[in-house]
View 1 (cartoon, rainbow, N blue to C red):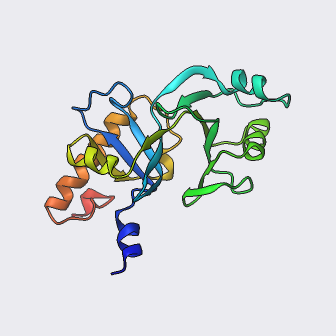
View 2: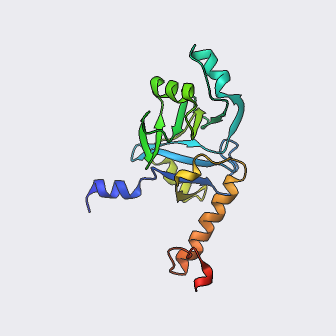
Length: 191
């Protein structure tokens, strides 16, 4: 296996990083982070569970004269200051692929298109979560984070209860793996 294959396998891009119940850091306690970029130099992600009391409309009116048709809350993507960013499912707008059919955009023209058309589903963020070389791996080894592959439906649901639901999903997957089962059948009565 080549070094690039190892890096691909160990990358958490497109995964959810779920704060362990013991994690007390106020920036991440009871949070779920979508990892956008992860390699040997570090990681970058967006917290999916921290809606603010500020709307996209309030922020947009300060940076653009175009009409904002989006009334959604802005999410705090993490403790590091950053520009307005979006996760969305509009393939016509484009951006960086996060998952099949889900894109990450920071380009002004992408954001303007999403906001002025009220493209849905979409979620907007200010700030981001970042880890330097080896930092995320050390935090995971210390038990601060759990991981699960992200699903498109995870990224746009209400943040209330999302942390708990994701922990239950991870726990269920761990139990299944320990039993040598990949997943429960959709119809348990068929057993």
